Image 1 (tube, one colour):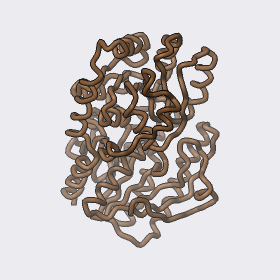
Image 2: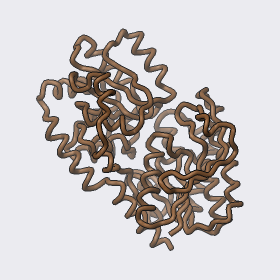
Image 3: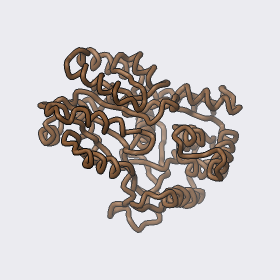
Image 4: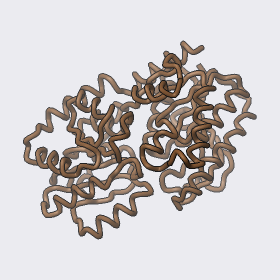
Length: 404
């Protein structure tokens, strides 16, 4: 099959959206399919394009043997709502020029959010007479309401609702990352027969990567009881819970917290930690994926928070990755993520925002009242059995083949 992905994010950018599409693309290619990517110039999450990608309207390159078609995207380090809208709209409009590319594709898979890139993918699919698959990572605009970003009375909500309903209706197939999202779409009147669950996954190849001992030694990860958050520092994560936990342990020199990643909430959280006089929390910043893996492999536990228990249908990729590596997870969330974690026996779940409960679990792990070894082994075995990206790509391949 000839498969084209429309995605707002792609390597060398980081984040769950990038990991999902890159993982699927590489594994589909390994199965013998022809895979290409339409995306923008890398700028996420800093908003700054590197020298090799700046001041360009179009560029074609290859990553891991996959053709990448990059189109102009407006970016800026200023994280205002206006800048974000320009960022989304610019790629939506510029990527429409792929219409003039003469190649034909059996399937065009557009991943959302943001919805705007998916709209461009739909338009191109009609010109090329390809099957259109909408890959839904978050159900918009519902997720905006759940996080408190949107009001049902706002103009933005109404616009997003119309675009999303249009795409749900016009797509030939919808893929979702969780069963909760499938149920949510079915309540919107979308036939369950049209929706396939293609979950997020774990790249088992990372288990063979060598440790970054320089980074491990710099932060004394093996000497201290180390709790790690690795991912985007944004609104949905609700990372204030980690600051509160660090505050509780500030007088214990043997316990430390590492925040690995970046995002528009990072500066605010760093300032809060400084104002509280915290000396046990380190903002490591963006790191190569191999270094993130190295940190998690040597840490005592991974903290995976979500802002609200209302996010019932979210399963963070970082949770699956931590489990697959063998790093016990403390999940601050409910819903489907909690059910998966409990089934894996790879960690402990607490309620979103409950820093007192989080502190209690950290104490139990630190005092060895809970077995890290058992969690590590159970979590890794569970993910390798159910959530590897090659198996997930196989499932997507089967679904697309049946679609015709």
